[in-house]
Length: 313
Ligand SMILES: C[S@@+](CC[C@H](N)C(=O)[O-])C[C@H]1O[C@@H](n2cnc3c(N)ncnc32)[C@H](O)[C@@H]1O
Image (cartoon, rainbow, N blue to C red):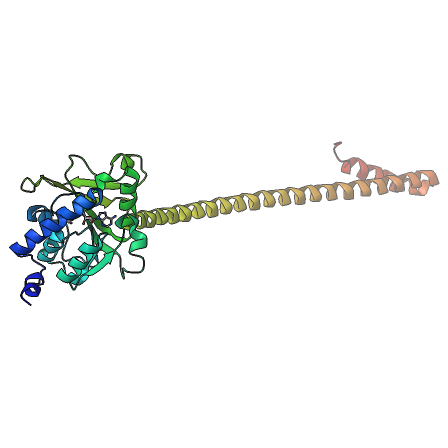
């Protein structure tokens, strides 16, 4: 009962006795598998606090912790005000998992491989995560594994989510040149060094820059721009069509008018020529009859013919 009380106070805070036990367990894990454990002792509280500082307790959604070990970062997250029910702890070592389950009974403990995060957490998250807080020994893994871990973490986070990682190294543990290549756009920001940790460490915070929210926003703006351009083009097409129709109507009216005029002129000419031909025919007929009584009529017809003679065209 006494040891039970020592292990499960409300924020999973360890007693001195327990801290020694943790050091011993951690050291044993490191001796057995140094590449997986990655450190000879649990992180100190200053480093754990620095990690937790980057998580907004007012955010919503799960906070995923990768490689919690004996739980110093978990404690810092709880102290920061993150509700235990929001914490999902992904740990490879079965022994640490049992210990975590005892120490943080309200947190979700998942025993599995954090480098295969999508599969390990498949169906376990009810909503996108607010943050992924990782103490994994990244430097023992190839670049491709680290980048893939970041990609999978971004995929299960909210657009404004952060991937938080500590390192004992001097540079970003996730290669930034991949970012430069545009393979996965993210921005990386280092914390000040935590000198009081042994060895001194630093925290890096990664944020997706091509986040779904940003993409959606850019897509929305692009759609609006395209719609405006389409509206403008439609207006221009309508105007051009109206202008062409008007031009066509004007040409058609002119052609019709011209045709009418020509038809009228031709009609008048034909009528006049027919009449003249008739008169000449009549004159000819009268001349041929040789009747003196008809001479005045012949003279008159000749006179009319002279008078009405149309100009030669
Ligand atoms: C450097 S320790 C950090 C432990 C603890 N968070 C701390 O700060 O003291 C790394 C932890 O990651 C765990 N780990 C290593 N590889 C892992 C993997 N592929 N999946 C899940 N946990 C892993 C180890 O078992 C170990 O507990």
